[in-house]
Image 1 (cartoon, rainbow over the protein chains, first blue to last red):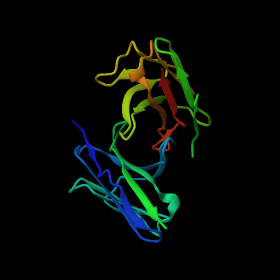
Image 2 (image 1 turned 180 degrees about the vertical axis):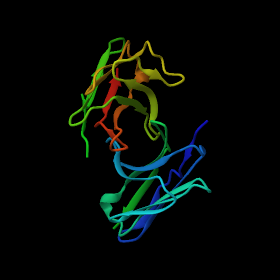
Image 3 (image 1 turned 90 degrees about the vertical axis):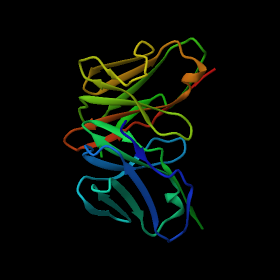
Image 4 (image 1 turned 60 degrees about the vertical axis):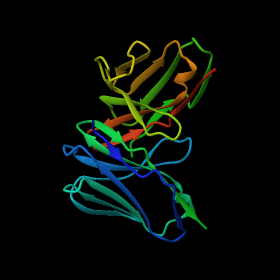
Length: 109
Length: 115
């Protein structure tokens, strides 16, 4: 069974710090990987996606992919209270997205 | 980015009745749409893949006769929960892929409560 694993958290970081969110996946055939942010009661919002090994940066966010280790991460620099949410990692195989259970991030003042 | 509009955002219905949820792609043509269900504190679980002009493909364990999916046009897919029961209460979310964008865009979600 194809799985995406995330630590449920909560992960607490002080405002201004770097938040590091991790994800592992089991399907080596996965083609690309996505990070979504989901506020309570709301639909997921795409933060970024990555499909090549290495780092991809977009503003305060950096996604990292290591296909050999089947590992994806998301770094959030200068964390803000508004970043407090659940972060979902998803892998794509064909047209299907497989989601992890999400990591709850709390950015504290 | 592309916009996917889902309606209604919240619905309460009586046990045994049916509820229809609409998902529209507003500024692009969605040949494929996906329907997810999310229970509290859990991840999104894919229920079915909806393809324009053809039958939906249901994931294992999802009753196709209970969750009716229609994708009659390139911009509209509907999910009908038939004979709803309290255990069907959940957050239902649709998603549409624009292959050119290689991204999946989500609707706002529908909170279904069956009483």
